[in-house]
Structures are given as C-alpha cells and as structure tokens.
Image (cartoon, helix red, strand yellow):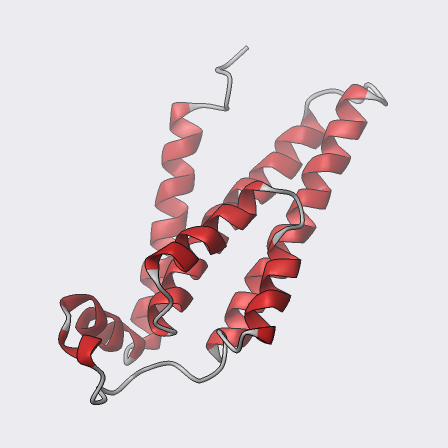
Length: 153
C-alpha cells in the first residue's frame, strides 16, 4: 500500500464517519430515537478521526511535508468532509507522489532522528501496523475514560 492509497483510504473513511455521526445526531434529535445513534456514530467517528490525524502525521513525515502542512492536514478532520477536497488538493500539488522511504538518500534530513526512526519502522511493516493500532486504540481508550465532550450526563 502506497502512502497515497493509505492516506486516501483513511481520508474517505473519515468523511464516511462524519456521515454516521451526523445521521446519528439526526436520529437522536429529530427522530427522538435516543442516545444510541450518536454513541455508535460518535465512537466510529472518534476512532477514525484519531486514525486520520495519525495517518496525516505518518504520511506527512514520509512525504517530507512542512510541519504547517501536516498540521493543516490534521486540522481538516475537524470540519465535516474537508478531508476529501484536501486530499484532492494534495493530489494536484503532487504531495502524495512516491513510495514509502525505506532507505536513506542524500537528502539533508535523512540523518535526523525522526527520519531514522520512520525508516526503521517502515522496514518493519507488521510492527508499524501494530504500533499504529495500539497508538490509535490507546488514544481512543484514554478519550473514553476521560468522557465525552461536555461531560457525562
């Protein structure tokens, strides 16, 4: 899976979960179906939101995006459906071109510890996948422990 495919898949999933959350809110407030639609949609959206932000950082580091662009990519998850036009913008600007950087090149940043760790992890895709899932799951578990925005009823 290329950085483009990975990023695009998670960006689309993020937009889909916005739909689930919005539909859940309509079911709760307009159709009076109780809290469960928002609970289900909110859980799915929260999980994919965290995965999207993590993916934006991972792909951004791999593609050598400036920090401002990585933060901008992560920020698009806060606005419903903005990940899709942002993905298209990245495509037009060729910011998703290329594969995973598994070997060092002559680039000045290749010696930086972040790039060294990134290459080390990219050369161990199973470990990277496990770390990704544990990281996203850990953030989600922490957020569930802390409670929903606005506090518990």
